[in-house]
Image (tube, rainbow, N blue to C red; front, side):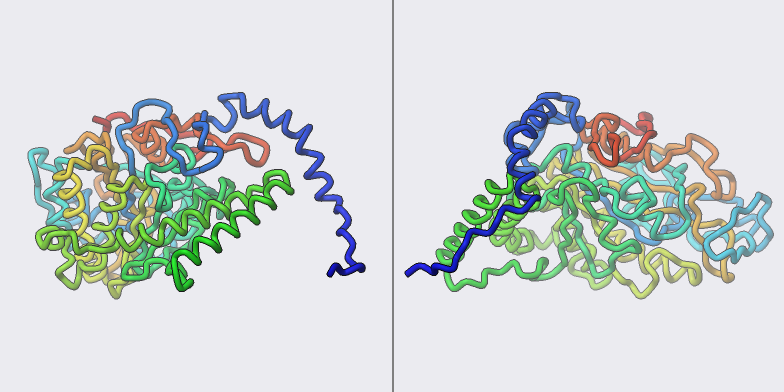
Length: 477
């Protein structure tokens, strides 16, 4: 029986414009898509249907995947990878250099490092006693001692490190990598962030896709048996779930046809499909039963201080084995304020280093033994460094004017030290490396020309490196 009062809903102005645009708009769209320069890339034919489908790089890549070890808070360069004997000689004296305004403007006298440095490997690179395990891997690492940043405050500096901009909402480097190359793994997100419970200042916008399509944003995984919420099947049987998903897909595609290709609807369809695949892929990823006891010990998973970050590093290896493009690891809470020691430097840095040192060394050695290090770029970095002067007597303030980070694997020339700071470790004075330079180098190792990896937004072609960035060729193999 039909209701005689039913009348079709009149077409709205918005729907009329959408439907009319299907004709004339398609003509303009076809012209744009025929231009290889549009958006800087020529995606494969199936990439339009699946944004995470693997795409060809601009040139042969050295690195297929990236593991970014984010040392949130800003490790001190003069206490880790940049030894400065002058600090010990002038400990407690006023620094004999111009001093820049710092985050808290609490500027004390010169503070020597509480740790000794020793030479390691065939390269003889000095590393602090904070990292006895990582130090054994220096022949696979390129240490940059001349990094500079534009911001001395955590939130803006975190945005700058991740996206090349101190502003909120720009695409993260993980989003750019998956936008440019897609992912070789089709049952997991292409950009995954492994969280140990502490989101850095700036929040989830550190891992956002920004103005890029939402498919490229970072997916946050927790450690433990339930890395993602609401992933388990709620239906009684898999057949019932499949039926519901089939109906949802049919309804979504009907809406897609009616609206003329709404990207939000397309993203919803793909999200449902990926979530369905992840129901089996994620439990398999997190199941460590197939790992040997020796492997678990290598990562320090059998020890309390290193258990959490060790699990993260092992999961990172398993992710790149499965073809995930970009993996970021976040620090855990060790009872100190991340690496942000404005006071009690000795205890704070010691606890942070103890939590990550053995797991990171285990990751590098495990990747190498499995033949994965050559195709995996590992990057260790904080958002800035710390001052050579004391703050509060036994801490250090933020320092974006000269600090250290390191890279390994994926086309990096191991056993390399590049750049230098002054005798105090305060300012970069030789071969300065900017964040845009770092991003350009990372993209280059992944086979992408950073000047061609663009996305039209706000009236111009946007890119991760903005309008600058040079490849740091001396650290390339």
